[in-house]
View 1 (cartoon, rainbow, N blue to C red):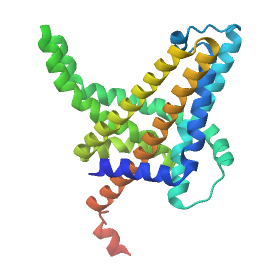
View 2: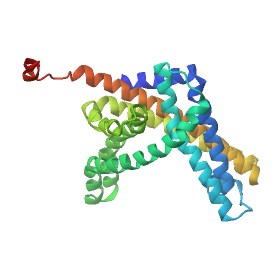
View 3: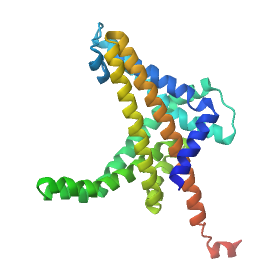
Amino acid sequence: MRAFEAVTEAISSISEDKKLWRYPVAASGIAGALLAISGLDSNVESVAYTPRFGIGIAILLALIALLIRLTVIYYPTRAFYYHKKGIPFEESALIRESLRGGILALLVGIVYGIVILVVGGLMLFPAILAYYALSGTTKYVIAGVLGLPPVIFLMGIIVMMIPAYIWSQDFGEGLGIIGTALDNAKEVFAFGALMGAIIVGIEAAAGGLVFLASLVVKGLPGALLAGLLDGLITGISRVLSDVAGVVMYRKLKIWVKKERPVEVDPDWVASL
C-alpha cells in the first residue's frame, strides 16, 4: 500500500540525511524550553514552576518560540525537496529561507484550515445529526461509528496539505489534495490511520517523559527539562509527518498522471 510505502520511504530518507532532522528537532526543543520558561506552557503546571519576571518578558519568550516553530513548519519539507532533487544546500541558508517560508505556510494553513472545516463539517454531518437526534448510550455509539472514518480520512488529507504546498510552492497543490484524496479514498484512509497512530504514539511518549521528569525535577530546571523533552519529541513527530506527507502526496500525483492521461483535443492537433 502507498501509505506504508510513504512512511517507510520517509524513515529511510530521514535516516540517510541528518540535514532533514537535525535543525528542526533541535529548534523544536529550544522553542519548547523557551515556552516553558515563559510560564505560558501547560507543562509547567506539573513541575510547580512560576516565572519571576513580568508578563512582557514572558510574551517576548513566547514570540521567539513561535518564530522558531514557524521555521520548523517549513524546513523539513523543503530540506526533503533538496534531498530528493539532489540539490546541495546549507542548513543556515535553509533556516533563513524558512523564516519567510514558515510565515507564508502559516497563512496558507489558515486558509486550508477553513476549507477543511467546511469539508469536514459536511463529512461529519451524519455523525453530528445522529448525536443530536438519538438519546442515551446509542447516540455515542452511532456518532462514533459514523464519525471516526471521516476523521481518519481527514487526517490523511491534513498531513499532506501543507507539505504539498511547500514542496510545489503552489497554493493550489494543497487544495488539490482534497480532490485527489476523494478519488483514492482507501489509500488516504489507510495513510490517515497510520499517521494518526504514529502521531498519537509519539505524543503519548512525550507526555510520559514529561510526567516522569516532573516527578524528579521541579521549578525552573523542571520547566526547562519538560519543555525541552516535549519540544524534541514534537520535532521528531513534525519531521516524520511532514516528510511522510510529501512522499504520499508525490505518490498520489504519480497515480493521477498514470490513471488520468492528458486528453488532447483532436481539433487542436489538426490545426497544427
